[in-house]
Amino acid sequence: MKSEQVVHRFKEKGYKITPQRRAIINALLLAKQPATAGELLQELRDLFPDISLDTVYRNLKLLTDLGLLNQINVKSGETSRFEFSDCPHHHHLVCMQCGASRCLDYCAMEKGGLAAAEEHGFEVVGHVFEIYGYCPGCRGAN
Amino acid sequence: MKSEQVVHRFKEKGYKITPQRRAIINALLLAKQPATAGELLQELRDLFPDISLDTVYRNLKLLTDLGLLNQINVKSGETSRFEFSDCPHHHHLVCMQCGASRCLDYCAMEKGGLAAAEEHGFEVVGHVFEIYGYCPGCRGAN
DNA sequence: ATCGGTGCAAACCATTTGCACGTTA
DNA sequence: TAACGTGCAAATGGTTTGCACCGAT
Image (cartoon, rainbow over all chains, first blue to last red; front, top):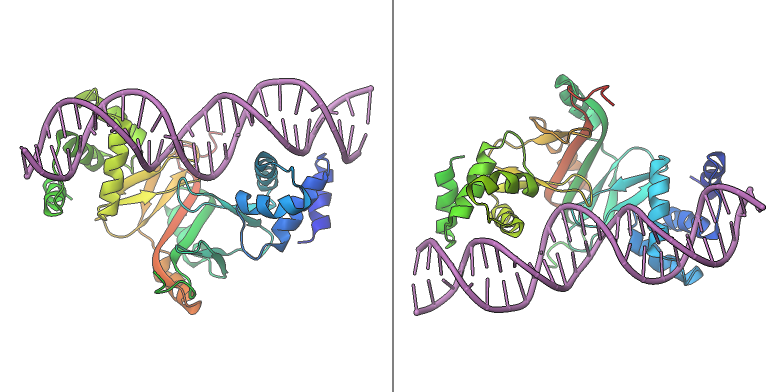
């Protein structure tokens, strides 16, 4: 997804485009892996020393509500990660040592999960599939 | 799983058995669905008006660390649910309306997820697979 | 000139922790 | 009686909200 497409979606909905918003979008687009609000704040501080964490959260929430971002929840109480949702549907490998989150082009739902859910009369809206473990760099390091 | 088995595991590990502990174990065993700390507190108050939420949390954590409970995380910031882990490995259907959590005898990992993860040199420790949507009772109610 | 967006500070909520006392083994 | 477990209160960490000002449209 390109920055301008996101900006366009914003204008379409009547939202204004601020420098902070552009910066948040760009930081997310440049991120090599799904990012946390805190990580984004760090990077954004370079350009906007005064940007606040609440602005980051507000915009992440807005982008998520617009359906542009996926929110990846790891554990209750742990921080969420965000990524653009336009990439082909996929899930993640989450490293328990370094916290890195790699994308995985395998979807559990496609392999029967959906059918299993609907057997129960459930109307499926979404799903989470996350694998925890240690990435190659961290294996055995602990 | 029976209450006495759990108690036995506790003693084995050198933990003491208190009335509160027994009550928490029983409340979890009786629960019709994975329970939250708050729900458990409510029920426990009948027997122990003075039991505190921290005691519930402490014991849920202990039981989880001993591998006796599964902790089901929904969203970051939302409360976790707990269930005994001795039932055959499975996942959940979580209703976004009423919060009910039904068990599902389908495991995404078994269908190829594990292989997909190991392709990346990842050492798999655990995984989460949760399906969100609306249960039969809540469909269309919103 | 509006009205939405921002920074700041304070509020919130689930969960955790420090401490002194009570209870189990 | 020696740990360990508990209740209480306070701390924590992620996230949200109220408010007054500022900036995009």
